[in-house]
Amino acid sequence: MSDNILIIEHDLTIAEFLIEHMQDIGVKVTHCSSYQDGLEMAISQPFSLLILGFNMPSCVGLDICQKIKAVNKEQAILMVTFKVPELQQLLCLELGADDYIADPFNVRELQARVKALLRRVHLLKEIKSETVVSENDAICHGQLLINKVTHEVILRDQNLVLTSTEFNLLSFMAQKPDHVFSRAELLDKVWGYQHSGYEQTVSTHINRLRNKLVAGQPNSLNKVFPDIIQTVFGVGYKFSLAGVA
Image 1 (cartoon, rainbow, N blue to C red):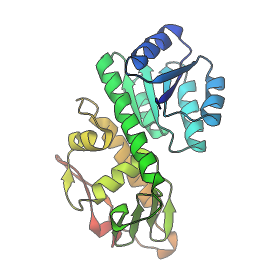
Image 2: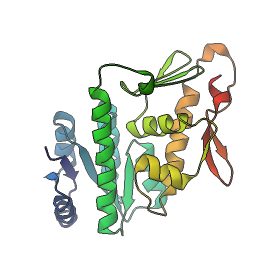
Image 3: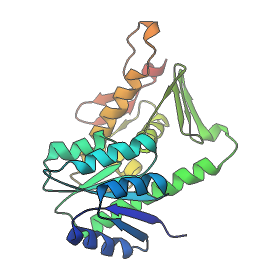
Image 4: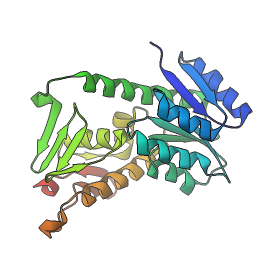
């Protein structure tokens, strides 16, 4: 069955451009020019991927992204930004988008981003189709349990709510404790592409993940724990066993 992508973009010229190049990679495309109708469609119907247009000064695309993720945190979303400052682009990730691509961009890069996101969607479906949890399906370090079948993360008896990208990032790094990963390596292994200039995507997701890990610590312990995801300045990031002891 072909992947089904929903494009929410009010500008018909941009929408036609996106539709054409998505059809070129063999996916089924549905287009909605109304943000409100697109929101209702995204919530009520299953789509492999949502592509949301975001053009300043309107911030409707960001609002739609946030509302969709509040209902379905595992819905894959790619934001396509036009004439948007870098800080606003990063806000796309803060509000739950799995990735963004900024204009001007190469068509092949756009298609590569979409293919990478779809591969992750398929992997998630395969994991969730499993009914038995084996040792290979779970990662356990100290007070942290990562269930790769149910996509549950439990830290000191607290359930953490992570997006699919945050979960993939944490589980990947947790497989090699204390190994330092560069941003380019994480971009390649977790996001599935190697385009330069988008390492900031990694940094933003690392910060969001780190904040959730800190917020998930039980207040009753009245203790400050070391960061689970630590920055190694000038090199990258690592998963620290000291943070889950």
